Structure formats: C-alpha cells, structure tokens
Amino acid sequence: MPTMADVARSAGVSVATVSHVLNDTRPVLPHTRQAVLDAVEELGYTPNTLARSLVTSRTRSIGLAVSAISNPYFTEILQGVEAAALEQGYGLLIADPHDDPGHEREVVRLLHERRVDGMIVAPSADPSALVAYLGRHRVPAVFLDRVVDAPVGDGAPHFDQVCAEGAEPTARLVTHLAGLGHRRIGLVAGRPGLSTTRERITGYRHGLAAAGLPHDERLLVHGDSEAAGGERATAALLSLAVPPTALVTANNAMTIGALRALRDRGLSVPGDLALCCFDDFPWADLFSPRLTAVAQPSRELGARAVEMLLERLAAPDRPARTVRLPSAFVHRTSCGCPEQPEQAPVLAHERTLP
Image 1 (cartoon, rainbow, N blue to C red):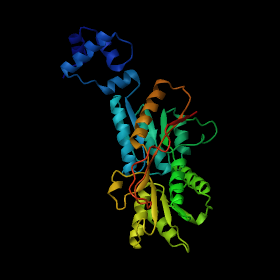
Image 2: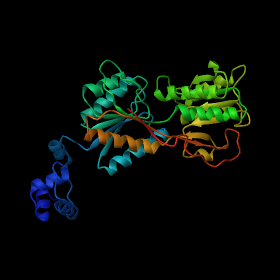
Image 3: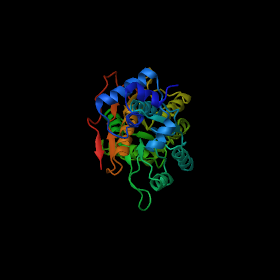
Image 4: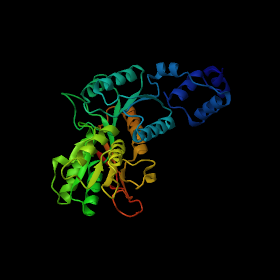
C-alpha cells in the first residue's frame, strides 16, 4: 500500500507539502498541488483519515439527525444532504431521533462523540435540550426543515436554519378550494409544537380570512404528522354533524391516512370531498385522482443545509441566518379541477432572515 512518502517522492516534493495539500493546512502553489494530486491518483494512495483528523482537528464528517427517515420527504432531503456533502468531500453519519426530545439529545450526543465537524438537525417539538447541548459544546449546527423561532433558555445561541415556506403556500391551497365554492374547509394539522405545524395552521387561518370564511375550530384537527393520526383526524372531521366539503392535509403521511379514512367510508375524491395536500409525492400523479399539492424543494433544502454548515465551519463568528426556500403549487385534479399544467413556485425567490 503506497504511503505519503511514496507520494512525495513521485511528486518531487516533501512529505510536509503532501500533507498540506491533502489536509488543506497551508497554501501550496497550483503546479505543486497538481503534481501531488497526480501522484496520489497514479499511486492509488488513500489518506489515513484518522491521522488526518489528528492533524487538522477535523474528521470531514457531518452528523445528520432527522426523524422519519422512511418518509419520502425526508428521504429526498437525505439525498440532497448526501450529494452535497460528498461533492465537498464529507462523509455522513445518520441518526433518527424519532421526534422524541430525550432521544434527540441522546443521538446528538452520540454523533458529537464521533467527532463530526458539524450537525444538521430537524428539531423536535421541544428542542430545549438539543439547543442547550449544542450551545454548551459549541457544536456548529444547522436546523433543517423545522426551525426554532427564538433562542430556548437564557443566553442560548442562535443557529443557522433552512426551511421551506409554509404559511403562504398553505393559504394558497385554502383560497384555491374556497374559489371552487367550498365554505367548510378542514385542516389535518401536524404534530403540535413543530414549527411546520404552526406555520401551516397560520396559513390555513390566513387563507380562510382572505376568502372571507369564518374559522371554525372544529374543522382543525391534529394528525400528529403520521398516517395513523391523519386517518383518525379525518375520521373525526367526517363524523361532524356538518362535515367539511374540502380538506387540506399538512404532510404526505397524513394524506395517506386521510385517503384511507375516505376509502373505508366509501367516499370519493373529489366527488364527495375535495382534497389538497402539503408535500408532493414522487408518485402523486399516479393517484386517481391526481393530487393537488404544495411541493417543497426537499433536495435543495438538504443541499443548502450542507452549504450553510460549511460556511459556518469556515467562519464560526458570522451572524446566524434563517433561509426560506419557495415551494411550488402543483395543480392536479383532487381539488375538483380539470387537468392543469404545473404552476410556477408560489414565491419566486428565497428569503434570508437575520
């Protein structure tokens, strides 16, 4: 197996120069750098990552903690994170916090003990222990998809955050249904406490207000961001004395649950109930009817989280940012409309908040 000394001899440089090139610890002239890289390629040299981490205090690894990895939405985020990390020469360690605050802190601790350079985390509904741990140990981190609206606890630091727009796209679904003549529009909301749940409820209420419709608390039911919860919530709405004629489901898992509840009652979409959903499925156009949905830029969210984390590693003292990426309204037929071409993104540009 070739050694660093072999690379140095082949490139006609010192072992120290090879180390600087591979570890990026000191500027090296371009032609010298290329000679080292050519020798590495020719000899098939594989750097000792453990030894390199001892020199640089970096492992070139990122910890990713997201719940419901089996959820297609998070799977696409994971693909975005992995591709962006690999492109920058970083490995990925993945853990599932299961949306449990205690387990969340534990998996973050385990990732930290494996000396990851930084973390990308989708926070739970109660991220206080998470924020405290990351702040106490000064772990560079980016919050993904779900954001922490304000520091949790006295003196808690701010963290970089990236998510998709949630309120305005949800309002768009509600006003679309209202424009089709619906006056009782239900919402199957997600797990209480999550920022995504709060934002989609806000959008739902704004949509009702914009359409001149009253807000009936009985039409808002939590499905806890899971298929089983979505099924229970939809069943509860259908059991009302005056059930909704249209429904917005606030994530893809709850959409599946809602469809199950409708099927079990022999109800059709959109004949008996119009349906719009937050989160698009890779196979959404295979449903009958095809699902009208808000499509989040999941892969872009993952890639942007990596970009922001690497920027934080390069400049630890830079001000924290919250970046919001636009979502797209995908107009299909479950809302009761005829086939339509896909629409432009709800918001044309991303937003960055200090």
